[in-house]
Amino acid sequence: MTTYNANNERIKRKYYVYLKEAKRNSEPTVDAAAKALARFEIDTKHCDFKLFHIEQAISFKHRLLEQQSQMTGEKLSKSTVYATLTCLKCFFCWLAGQPGYKSRIQYSDADYFNLSEKDMRVATTYHEQVGPTLEQAQHVITVMPFGTAIERRDRALVAFTLLTGARDSAIASVKLKHVNLVDGYLDQDAREVDTKFSKSFVTYFFPVGNDALQILVDWVSYLREEMLWGDDDPLFPSTRVGVSAELQFEVLGLERSNWSSAAPIRTIFQDAFKNAGLPYFNPHSIRNTLVRLGLKVCKTPEEFKEWSQNLGHEKVLTTFQSYGKVDRPRQGQIIRALASPQLAAGQADLAKLAKALMREMRASCGMV
Image 1: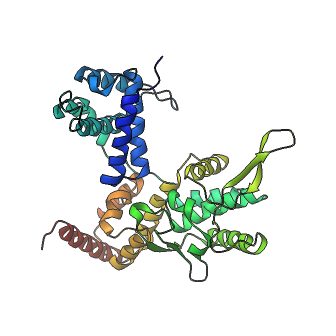
Image 2: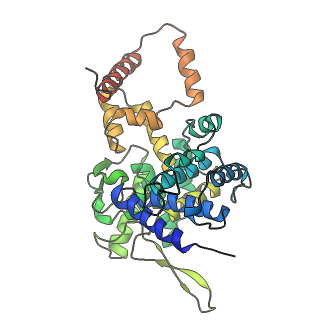
Image 3: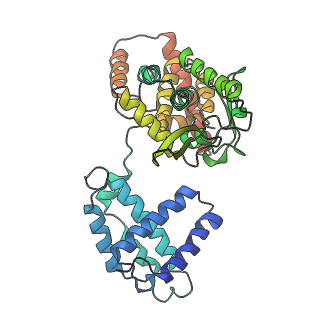
């Protein structure tokens, strides 16, 4: 059985270079395109792309809609199908302009990877962002074990995420020198920290309780005073794995290097929430937790603007659009409270915040 096609491999390699160097896409984006193409080639038994015809696109699309996820055993979500088909549509659109393929593939052929309007609406519908409550996150940190160096690292990592709201890719690459415990901030320097859009900014520790801060202080002290690590060493080192006397792999301690990806961080969160008896929340969901906290504690537009900036958002509108949806229970409380005539100071502050948001929306749309 054929497992690859030499011609396909050559043109795919050219396409990946195009995505990375010409379109300036990130590695995860290129990987997503590679995964989509791999799915398509398996479905077509690695048929040469030069023999592509629209029936292949139609058949693949229908089979993908019925395919089951290996993780859940259920059908692939419409959003997953949409993302896969979008990658393939972009590839064949590009391929139609390449030498050796121009006479065989039309630009319009790529349109056959489109989902129906109904499926597309389902795939692109906004889903409410969910994150743990502040109390749940604090509980997870409290019950995490800290007897070994690995356990201390894991507990400090969860506490650090709650303190900073940093994305997992940034956490995986941060070094000791980026944390200032005296002034209480994280310097997300894009030259060394893997931030979104390679943007540099400073995050001051969010007011989430002293327990999280003390755990981080103790961890940094352990690395610097007991491990004798310096500024350029990782804040959260990877796990050292070796072969035991019984010739079996085992954990030996901490490696003096950063993780190569954020996957271990998500595993740490998964284990931590499971052991605490709570449903799993990924590291990114902590940002939702912090936005909800900001909506409670910020009293003026300036305060919420700074809270938003602390998350790395240049515009408050980004915070509201991505993370600012009010929870349903809270939504009900607000609506019921508005039923009674009152004009408290808090409502006046809310009105100011709404006006500031409207000004920002007008500015972003180019309106005077």
